Image (cartoon, rainbow, N blue to C red; front, side, top):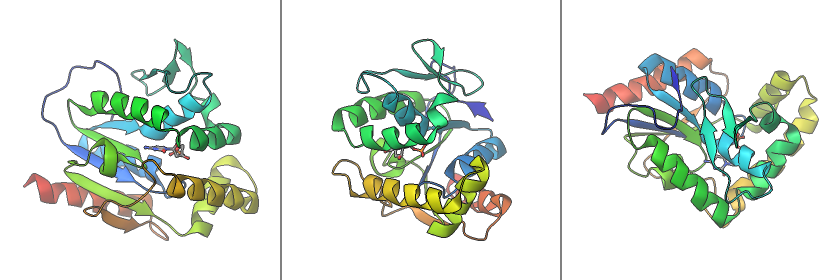
Length: 211
Ligand code: DC
């Protein structure tokens, strides 16, 4: 798998696999694995909103990814800082600001313009790339999503579930580009499924449009 890297030389007119869905549905794990399986580049659009949330000027922040997928803002590696619970909360708040969304969408479109990509987020298939060749809406039931996040972080599942519900409400009810399934997206419920099963299903979907 290649990681997002601004200015990397890739082929024009590539393919885009858009994976959207709520927090904890498994988007990052699945999108990375799909990118690795297909040899596509992976884009974590949530990392960009997280980086914006930590900035003093979220609508002007330029987010870059280095060759290892580290998230860089103003030359500083913020990859670890953006994963804190506070950063999650702030990301969800700045993501409701239309000026921030416009800036992020523009940067995301520029990145995915060339080459083959697996991009994950909340609005990839609806706003960033409505023409994506493959669109997946990844879901899982709330309890399972909270359990996964809690296991990742060694945190209390009840507390995490509370945070998750708040964040989902904010992400789904905001006026600008709320989290919704694109009409032409395939919904994949990951509850009780292994990562390999989900990846296989998405690679299969890509195979259908590549024929
Ligand atoms: O996927 P994530 O948890 O890293 O995303 C962090 C926040 O950013 C999330 O609460 C919603 C927002 N987001 C968004 O609004 N649009 C995207 N394409 C990706 C993330």
